Image (cartoon, rainbow, N blue to C red; front, side, top):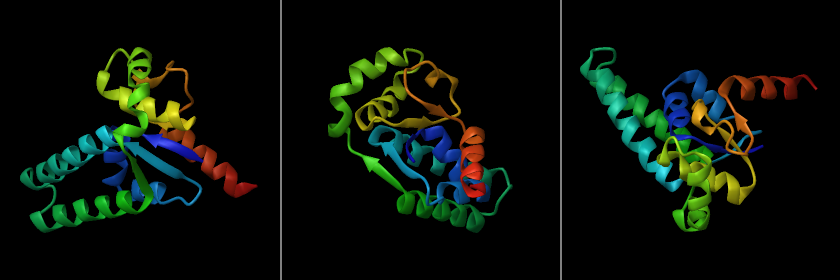
Length: 146
């Protein structure tokens, strides 16, 4: 199943063991908009640094977590260059007027004719299939039972 991953999902899941396992599911073909990838990298660095500063992880553990997150993303998620979806950005912006930063994710889904994996309610009603982590997990479990 081809899905465009929203930056917030990518960050949240890449920082969890369970999430990295989900990102690694062979049934999933995952892509991310170049703009969302930039946001993802920034947030991964900010969050792991914050975990170390707050004493939740030591610096070494935070570095290992960041490395694990990057490894799973780089091995399982294809970055879609802006030039591929830029012609759809204006239409995409109209579909998610609440947050212009979401437009690149919608534009990629429009161009690739696929769904979006997100937890952000702003995507609901954009005219494309939207998958939450919960619905995606249920779907993947149902596939293994068949």
